[in-house]
Image (cartoon, rainbow, N blue to C red; front, side, top):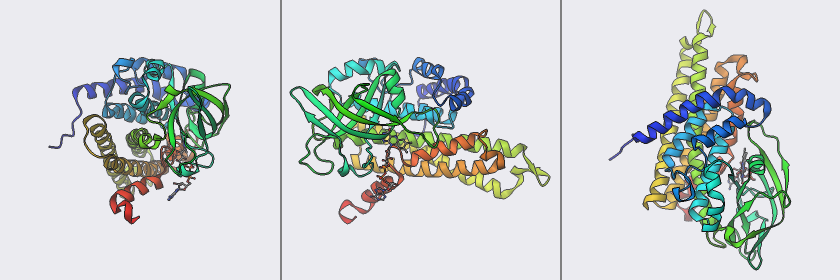
Length: 397
Ligand SMILES: Cc1cc2nc3c(=O)[nH]c(=O)nc-3n(C[C@H](O)[C@H](O)[C@H](O)COP(=O)(O)OP(=O)(O)OC[C@H]3O[C@@H](n4cnc5c(N)ncnc54)[C@H](O)[C@@H]3O)c2cc1C
């Protein structure tokens, strides 16, 4: 039987986050853009609301929320911040602290997760390198085994949340070669890399959008970590890294849909009061049909996003569906939601006329921010590759 209803608890959670976002996030977006950082009051408010490390189990001080509930929060934050800076911090921290909760060693979890759940420390993902994003075989970061741990050397680039982690503490789930004799994804491990002033040589990068985010690259110089910082099994990192990416991609799907629906809403409000040729813009059927098409697409994308989170939950917590089925469903949702959201926001910007192109217009911020999701946590081409592989069959492509 199909049941598309949220639980009573989920509705209450949505209402609480919506009220928080209306009060604390929406009025401070301009301040964030100007300062190019998320205001402290928002960070503290989110921590107080328990919006960081939401999947962290109760044993480590978290609330242990399910993926759909976390998706509800992601959607609401996506609706509140057109730049998507705050949604990015939310989704990265929640998806990758979940992976750490699932596969981290007990001592690592005891050390970090209670502070992550309190919003005192943050968890990022450092996978991409200057010469490797989609193609894992080109990875050059190496973690060399020592007597009781690993020494990491290499370079990571285009990494979100660098400043947040540097200033607050925490670290990155990273991926490195632990057996260089093996090719491709084999011989790679997932490791926890704590932020280290001494061993990470950071360069900040300027972004096209996401003004509140911090984005950077770093050289990793002889960073020594204990063996307990290995996440999952040695040389089998690529068997589990996708569980983190998929959670993040499903969250991106609902964030993109929420952000685009808000943008359509703002566009419609503008069209109602803007008069051209003696009548409001809403009287023009050409524009009405654009509103109808974008609304149909984005509401469908929102459903797909929640279905992606549901299927992820079914696999992770109830042993249903295969990894490949989950990958495909989530890739579908991320591909369509991020592509359609960009198109919807682009048209909403157009409905605002010249004002849409000005820095004063939220659609201008939104268009630049949403564009990032066609690359981050797996590009749109890689989403197509996953869907094609599962549809056509691995042996035929
Ligand atoms: C805003 C932003 C935030 C990011 N944050 C993080 C982060 O926090 N942590 C992190 O590790 N990374 C992060 N990234 C990096 C992101 O994951 C990569 O950009 C992405 O995986 C693509 O890798 P690449 O940039 O190296 O492109 P490449 O892999 O070099 O690809 C270049 C282009 O070719 C396409 N392409 C590649 N292979 C194929 C193929 N086989 N068939 C068809 N097309 C192909 C790609 O889709 C892309 O369009 C972020 C990126 C952005 C833009």
